[in-house]
Image (cartoon, rainbow, N blue to C red; front, side, top):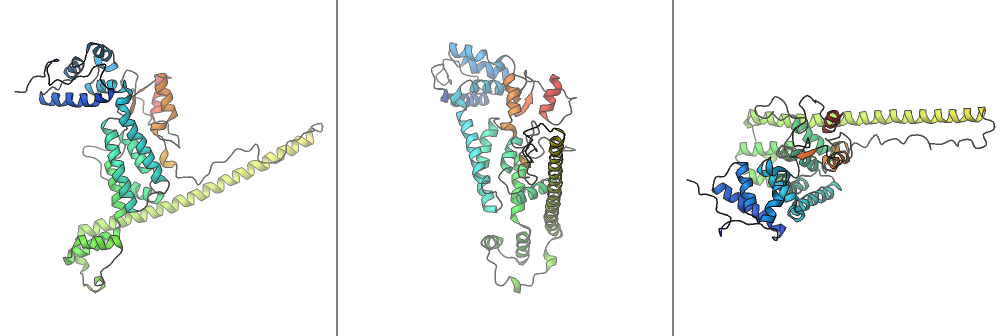
Amino acid sequence: MAPSMPGPNEKSTPRFESSTDPEELERFFSRLEELFNKCVVTMDAEKKKYTVVYTNIKTEKQWKVLEHHAKGTFKEFKKDILSSYDSALAGDRDAMQEMKQLVHRYRLSPIQERSDYMSFKQEFQVLAAVLKSEDVCSNRELVDQFLTPMSDELYNSMKLRLERLNLPAGKTSRDPANPYTLEEVMASGINMLQGVFSSMDRKRDEACGLDTAASSTRELHGVHASNRSNTNVDEAAVKQEDVGGILASMKDIFEQQAQQERQHIAALEKAFVEQQKMITSFLQQQQQQIQVQQYNPYNMHPAQPGFSSAPRQMNAGASSLNRLECWFCGENGHMNADCPMRMDYLNVGKIVMVRGRAHLPDGGKFPADIKDPLPKNWIDEYYS
């Protein structure tokens, strides 16, 4: 039989009072949740009851007026309490700031080598675990941050690899707003950076009974065994399924190269069209200015020819920001966490964020008949 929860005045009872240092709040909840597990307390209402009981009267009154005390889960109530103490969430803010600095540092020299990728991945996943455990960042936001410092070539290769993944069990399609998990994205980068031909070498070593660990070391340092060319390895020794995997990887590379070529041609065509538009606009402006001078003889200050009134053209070749498209409003140049439209809606009380997604002010979801993929458009349609 599970033990009962201790009384408020027992020595082993965790306590938090108004005079307690707010930095101790995390420790209070940690001990409280250990007691819940030990005493098999599973109901949210029971958890919230003991949370306020193990405080003094002043703190109990303050916590009982929080939004999710009367209705809501224990996790939501806990988050309300933590949010009411600035220093209690400082660790999460520090982790977010550290992640932004990490991404910025690697973005200065985009990642394209395996060593840089593994170093970045190692640091990133530690910070991601902290932010994800406290619902500070959604999976989509973490994926966007992780992909930001990747070189265009590596990004496109990872994208092709992800598109070839099987659907999750029981799913007929992927969620367009959150198609891949952070773990799937990280694994795709490792897979692409391992290389096709190093995989072929390892298969041949296995067929010859050689030490594959030593072979991997040779590949890492660019050293090839001198007798590699003298070994009579029968290519048929490589298993059929391994050949299929190698061919699939080679197909990915060829598709990625073809896609890059198509993108390059499309960018050139777009730049040519934009240049034509700019020249046409300039000539039309010049013609209009000439006509004004001809039909307005008393105009002593005719407009000077030039580009002053022509619209400034965007750089058609700047494709590196395409990956920073905000999934909240659909605009380029920023991500969901920094979206000004999202912050405006939060400030005026149109929405609240629950687990990284926009919800109605009372915590409910937007009507299912609003089909637009962008959260901004859900909100505008709902309030229209």
